Image (cartoon, rainbow, N blue to C red; front, side, top):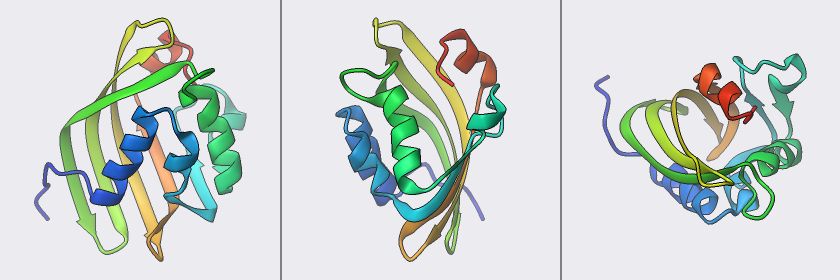
Length: 136
């Protein structure tokens, strides 16, 4: 399976929501019983979030247009491997903190979908970058 450099349409649409500060729009990619995991989170309690509403609440703390700590910018150097309902995405995010400081976040995501919605999202981001900017 050779990687491609195009983000799947459903995820590109969700990126657009985050760029607009619309966390609820992003959250529509999740099944109601989805799990979002941050295995490298410094805080044990934040490594696994269960349920779309809880995921949206946590991500709102980070990405909300008015109160969040991070403004979603762009995503490039994308490598996507997709087989059936499983997707692996690597890439580099170019964002800004609420005060305008640039933040570069490299990540790898392991995503499982069920019936067109995300059922499990394992989110591996550079923990040093997250800690430096107090993002997670």
